[in-house]
Length: 366
Image (cartoon, rainbow, N blue to C red; front, side):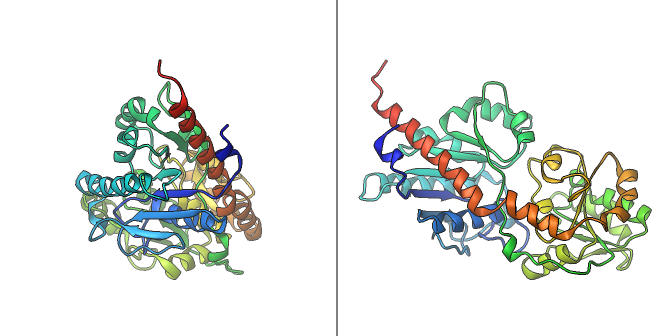
């Protein structure tokens, strides 16, 4: 290990967030809600962090928006992602030949950064936020060697393509201190997410009906899912048994989590993490989840919620969710997903990536 890495000096970190939504997200947001507390924790640990992000972002890190506007309605559009990444790479290259080069790039952008990571002299740590589906597996099989790959759950890591080395498994962070807890819970069940069949809002409606509980649905209807919402969700929304409150954020979102009897997580796909489960637990709200993806790593059965096999079993456990200790849920979230702990884990990965890059640079040519 090089002397520079061994000394444990503060690092200069280029944090690449996606270009779609500001950090932190004003309402719906996944990666952006993760990047925000991570940046703050790294700065608290005396690292210099520059956040390359969408306009409208705020952070204790140095904020460096790259595009003229955020693009929440165009999530995944290659034009904006490639433009954003190319501009960030140019700034990182300029820093490399200047007086204050970055030690490491931490990429949350998706695919463009990792695909082009071998064009940078600065080592890249890439967090995989999505599933290893067929397309992604082909991508990572070819490009993973260009950076240090971090998964956000063991379940996600197990589905990585053969030959892809996972540098670490580090969960997403949450700051429990900014999430409220209600001493007396409401009677409603909560489902929150983007309106998609794989996220299960239609199943949540069935569960609530079977349990005889009101249901609150919250989340955006993104382009391409209007027909699903109109056919499978809207006919059940009556303002009483089923309420749809749209996309929520800030204090309103936190209140919904804190006051709910339980969060329903009826997913039928390998969810890599499931941030809404962690947000619920941070508010002392138990989670009822299908045992899919990372749910078994997040929900401790019988202690912070229940893992169930189908909607009938989920409905049957709604009453029992009221016996779950709210303080235990919050304590679990604080202990397992604190930003300080996650930042410390990433420090180890950053320094290992720097060390590997140093060895590659000084190694003699074959």
